[in-house]
Length: 468
Ligand SMILES: Cc1cc2nc3c(=O)[nH]c(=O)nc-3n(C[C@H](O)[C@H](O)[C@H](O)COP(=O)(O)OP(=O)(O)OC[C@H]3O[C@@H](n4cnc5c(N)ncnc54)[C@H](O)[C@@H]3O)c2cc1C
Image (cartoon, rainbow, N blue to C red; front, side, top):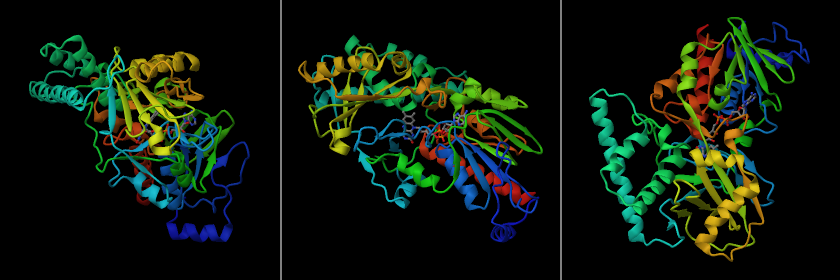
């Protein structure tokens, strides 16, 4: 069935090959002569799927990408409904620009990126008063102490071969000995929310003490795309064959190949790269026949999907401090409206972006847009006074209830480890290949991790083809 690459090119040139991926609805004709290399179905047109598909296409494979939504990009999603103000509803930053493949793509596609300076921030207390630099330093110092003690506790528990516990249990143990008053506790909770829970998109109660921060970081600082992150996926999509609105329902596989059933028809290929988010694998909306191996099922259950939601507010004009990158607030209840990104800094437009993660981030998904706006305005009025205007418009994400994501990104709860990410990445009978952020043991929960995972699986398929 397989020929080498030069033969493939020859065949392509001679026969102006018809579509190899056979959509059983359209019954495209496939002859043995046409069949040069394996055909591959990629499920999901997020960054992992596009990365896998473009790598395979570059190697001469014929690939079709099936995407359930009516757009590409998945958790990279730029809303352009506020004309002239592209807003990223999913990923915003290239995390660590050095040796990051997304930096290389930004350069290739000639995209502007701007740095975020996380130390450029103003912190407000629960009454909305601005804290001095000295007071902020004190809060940062106390948080650093907690992190150092966490590290020590982890090492001693590891050495004593004690079982994993949650970060929350570990932190409570540490805080108990610190004799903090109510306000100091709120300050520490603010640090925990903005530095840990927003980053991991979950409560500390759902993070493993042993493994919560085991992933690798890239250096060089973070940069965002003032013209929208979607330029990356558009560039990558190039001239790939992408079918939108194809909601995958079932994947059947055997040693002969793969059949994928969507809401609109059936597709067959030699192999499939599956980039379904962990949240989708968890909710069981895609059936596998035969069922996935128990190791993979265990990993799907062991890892969790967290929630980080964004609320963009557009005002008639900027009434907040123009200069800082971030505006932070010490809320009475942990993690409620504790962090705002000053979008005006990057776009010169009067827009603020509020973040909420974990329990509070999930809970607001049930509220109406107006209720959410009313909650955030109470906080902004505490800080900037009762006379600030209502926003002109707002955009609000609900990643937890998004059926094509089932949350924002994966994390490692107590008892789970990077071995679960590895299990998620394992191919099944050399027919099903798995990519996506939740298959990256080194860079989960990131765009670059997802991108690399797509390349990894493309390489795996190419290597396999060379062996057989
Ligand atoms: C709010 C938020 C902020 C983030 N911030 C950052 C950041 O600043 N920097 C960073 O590096 N990362 C960030 N991330 C994480 C990053 O966006 C993801 O890790 C990455 O985009 C995941 O890519 P993926 O290809 O693995 O998954 P996805 O992008 O989710 O792609 C999977 C695709 O599969 C499709 N799909 C799902 N179910 C089906 C089905 N049944 N049939 C067909 N198609 C289906 C989906 O629609 C989707 O297009 C953020 C994520 C969120 C939600």
